Image (cartoon, rainbow, N blue to C red; front, side):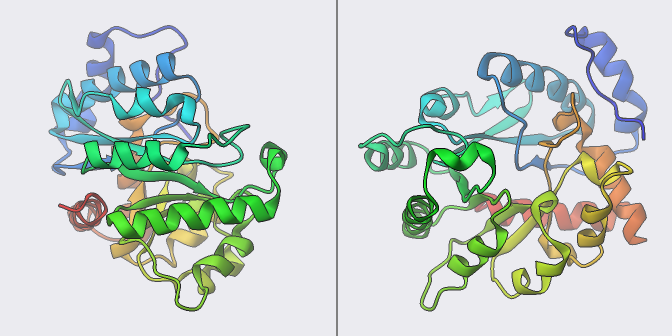
Length: 284
């Protein structure tokens, strides 16, 4: 499967615009939202993603990006990103996860509250549980406690949440289905982390959305495509964070068109659904 990606060396803006010109000419959607930008290195990833995304955004009217930081070291950097860069709307999301942080600052709740106060559009995330090797820096019980505190914070502030549960989806479902558990207005879970067998349980959880990455287009994305066909239109979102290298927000129109084709619906029908879903996520 071909993916329109940037080269290892930063391409010129002219080359990027030429690459997406034909696609953008046929794009009528006014608001692709990247709910989870791939983020490994602050200086490199933020700049490169904005560069490519700005080029296609200039042609296709609008792409918005959610930049996440699950390590407090990067919270200030992400929170202080300008909300509009070269036509791209930026929404920060801050959270704490064992896989993103080797320590939990004693004042993390105070710091998070400060950023929530300063930015009414800020989301919370990524938050969740991690039972992979990356999450071994914290016990499962400690992770659960941290996750519940951040869920409660999201409920109190009325903010949407980005979820993550590497190898820990059953444990997360158990928490989300706890009796008397209040849930945030919207929660976004990567479709790549969804077990098809657990999908019926997930569909009973209110306010839960599924974000599909370019991996759904790949020959290895069989599980994502199975999840896609069981997901109602009003729960579909997009993200660029994926196992595939060199993908960024500029891939989203391709992903949307692929999804529409696989669901056997008109593109404009999917685009309208994506726009409504994005507006609910952002509280517009």
